[in-house]
Image 1: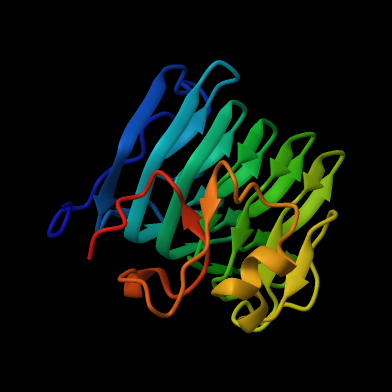
Image 2: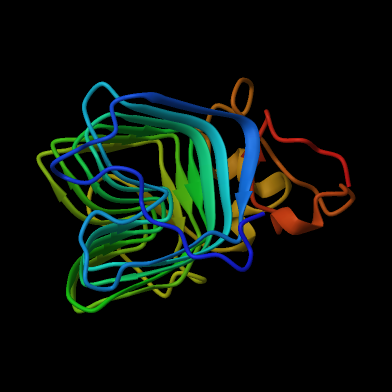
Length: 231
């Protein structure tokens, strides 16, 4: 639990993270990074092509930056997988709930982060997907910005988006750049998720959350199978 402390991002554009961060399904709680005059802001500020972040959650985060700000990674040239974020992210451009700028890969991940970008390229999961890939992922947080604003991806420039979804009600966004699918809240929750999110790997990576389950904090949206299902 990071409550009561303000942290700095790991890595920036001149010294990018090149290692492997395997959270082993643990959570970083109450992470605050306030770098309102800096770029490349997130738990990992900037990650190189050899870097990996996987199996980790960032919960109740409060992230503030300028360019390339994300709940988990500010600028990603590597691989982000089986990860998720909640909380809020505020920035100027290239602002995303999970990743601000992506030219690597994002897969089997989700974000419920509320995203606020003062300018452009603002998305619920990824702000700017430039030559990167986004697959089997979703977002549900509110998204606001000036231009190039999307429910899942704000701006998809030369990248690919596949098998991914966003909540077009809770996000306040009726569109997303790239080939993502917008669904209503009820279409993404409970039993309806497996019917409507049919490109998801429910047999291998995700599981639906029913009203009778103990996962009240999951809000009824699908969660990664690796997560602890105990109350």
